[in-house]
Structure formats: structure tokens, C-alpha cells
Length: 423
Image (cartoon, rainbow, N blue to C red; front, side, top):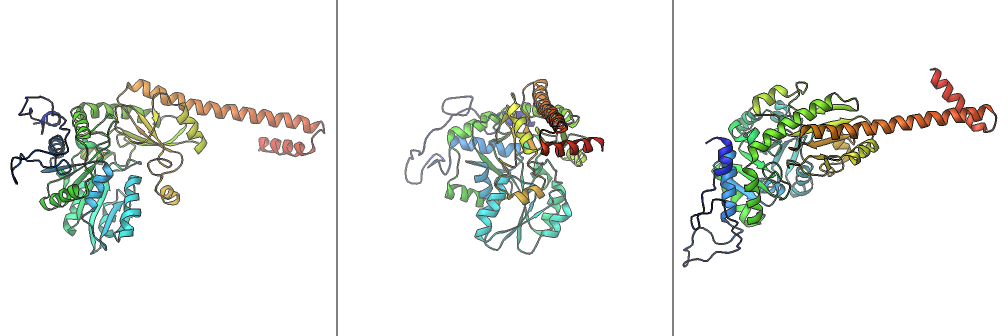
């Protein structure tokens, strides 16, 4: 079956007891057993639940994985993957990554004895050079958050395989509709199902997908032992969202392309980060590795942090909010929101500055999205023009007063202003 068909049907057979076409929400904590050790496959909902089982089977199908595990959040899923590490183990990670992942690595795992090195995300040779005898894992995102760099998954997978290192890919930004990392050689895929998979900004969830028997058993044990599992209702919400993933992603991609092209031509925009643009350095890789270019667009704003604040306050269709991947368009300020946990110096070194904005382009009418961005950008420009006019008027007025000898200090200002004007 093709992707869109699997998204609707995989793991979601009609309910055998009632014939219900849609997977039921099995809202129970426990299950009646027929005798000692005799049950119908379920004992306790932390360990397993039919609604969650359906979600796990569907997500595994979409990522072409043998196994799927659902978690209560993307970070719970990431923590499950990292649970196989022990003190003294080493991880190589791309340097452009979600701030929550960085926080988990640096403030939770490093104090426990796991070490991390961060390399330029798109530099395949850098991953190879950073591997040490104690390296157990390579962690990467592609496209990256928030700068939309790409990593050649197949090339890094070849490095990992040769060196005996597990390759984990956070596929949240792309979704399985756009790329399937396991097919490119990755060992494990992680998702925040909160984002594109659910697609409606009404649930928190995560998932881990793999075809590796040993890793699956380790993650499954951790899922049950640590207990970070989604509720039946949350599982059902993600399952419902996945049904429209293919059609939503097509519109996300189309709208993002149009928004990126608009931003690229606006004078108040310094730079646009979108792999669908021919100007993007990883455009060719994106064409090769992805089905389309995604719904995320980041751009560097021409101005100051105050200008950025003025811009986001003027938005009417885009909402200033964290998260991404919903049907509605969101604007995020990574430096103060999603990546605020990364120290400022480190953040800015990686390109996450105070004037960087990240757009999760929704599926509204693209003309409305562009009009909203245009009016907000033009509004900031108009404010600057008004402020400059007022400043020039004040200088002219003070100059006249100085010429009349009424304010001695203003005479110096006038003189300086005239000299500057002549220069």
C-alpha cells in the first residue's frame, strides 16, 4: 500500500467486538484476566493499551520500521533512546539541534557521566573525526531546528555502520511523509508526535521507530519501567491526525515555498533558510533525500530585537507561539523560546541570534499568510521611517534654537549634525 493509504489503515482494522470502523479509545487502566497468566494480550495500560498499539503499528508502517513505541512527549521518546547509554559513553551530535535536546544532553545526561561533542551538522567528515572508542551514538536532525540545514543521512549512516555506532535521526521537522531515515541507513528514528504527525496542536506525544530487535527490546523495557506513555485519548488524537498527514504535508510544503520566496525578496529580510529555495546550500541534497521541502521557514530579520518584537506584535494570522507542525501558522523566536536553554554565546555562535525568526507555515490560504507577513514587515519599516523623520525634525529644530543662541549645548549638536549631513 502507498503512504497515504497506510496512514489511514495501518494498524487500524475494524474493532472485532463491535465492528467500529474507527479505532476505539480504550479508556481503561486495567484488564480482566481469565485466570493466572491467562489474558487477552493486555494486563495494565502502562505496559500496553489497544489504542496505543494501533498508533504504534501505524507509525512503524509509515517509517518502514518493524517496531514502533509511543511516548508521552518527544522528550520522553528521546530519553528512552538515550537510556541505553552508560557513564563513560560518548555521543556525537549535530550542532544545530532543538534546545530541549541540548538541555537533556547537557543538564541531565552529562552530569550522569555521558559525554557529548557537537559538530557542524552538515559536515559528514566531522562526524567521522569526532568518533572515539567510547562513542556509542550519533544523533542528528535533518532538516535542523531552527536553521534548516540538511544532513546527508545515507553518508552519515555509512560512517556509523563502519564504526559500529548507532545512528539516531530526529525526523520531526520532515515527518515520514517527506523522508524515511531507516531506508537511508539510520538505526532509530525519533519523533515529537506533537508536531506534524498529530498536526492539530492539541496533544503532546512522542515516538521511537526501529527495526533493530535488540534496541527495540531495550526501549520497550524502558517504556514500561519508566512509564512515560501516552494516554489512550492522546494516542487516539495522534492516530486521527496521522490520517490526513499526506494531504496536510503537501499543502504545508506549497505554502512554505511561497512564503520563502516572498521573504527572500523583501528588503527587511537579511536571509531566508528554506531548503526548497535554489539559493539554499543544501537544495540539491534536499531534492535527493526528501519527497518535498517541508513546511518550516526561518529568516533573519533586518533590525534589532525591538524591531522583531514590533514585528511579531503586528502579526494577525501567524500566532507567536512555540511548537510547530499544526494546521495553523506559528511564528517562533528561537532565542527566547525553543532554544532559550542554550547559553547565549553558544546559541549565537551557532547562528541562533536575537533577530532570527522561525515560521511553521500552516495550511491557510497562502495569499493571506503572505499579506500578514507583508503588513507586519512594512509596519516596522514605516515605524522606522517615522522615527527617523522625527529625529531629523528634532535636529533641525535644535539647530535653529542654537543659531539664536538660546541653548549653548544644542549649538554643538547642530554643528555636529550639519557636519554629518555634509559628509
